[in-house]
Length: 90
Image: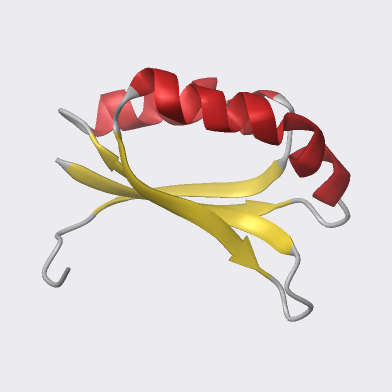
């Protein structure tokens, strides 16, 4: 099951993102369930959120992955939405 995780950072939290980026990327590598991922950008080109496509068994697994993401544990996000997603192109 593919799940799109769309997270928006808290205002002014770029340093929190930068401070936890290495742990976040290591978590992605370690868990092995991320099909695609990358930061969302603001008008100035600064990272301000995340788009992650998870390939997991069910929504509960996606929720667990999201809760254990080092970014989430650092309090980076203002909001996190998890939505089932269907790949059509690419």
